[in-house]
Length: 82
Image (cartoon, rainbow, N blue to C red; front, side, top):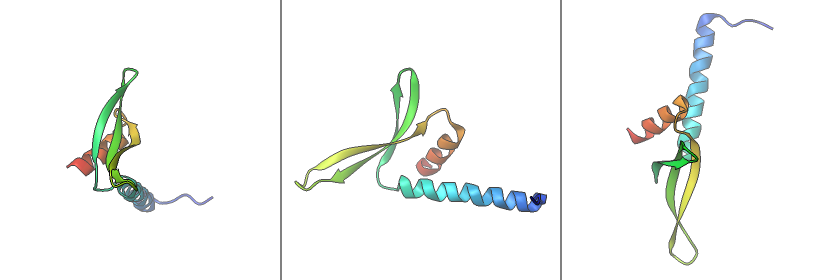
C-alpha cells in the first residue's frame, strides 16, 4: 500500500471533514432547533422540528444528534446555531 505524502493527507482529511459537515446539514436542516436533554445524568443533543400530519395538525419530531460532550457533535451543532 502506498503511503500518502503530507499534503495529500491534509487534503483527504479536509475532504472527509467537509463530507461530514454536508451530511450533518442534510440530516438536520435549517428548519427546527437544537436542544439538550438530560438522560440518566448525561446530556444529549436532539434536533426538533414540527412535521405536518394528514389531519393538518403539526407533530413534534425529535431526532437524536449525539452526546453533548462529543467535541465533533458540539462543533457541528454550534456551526448550525452560530
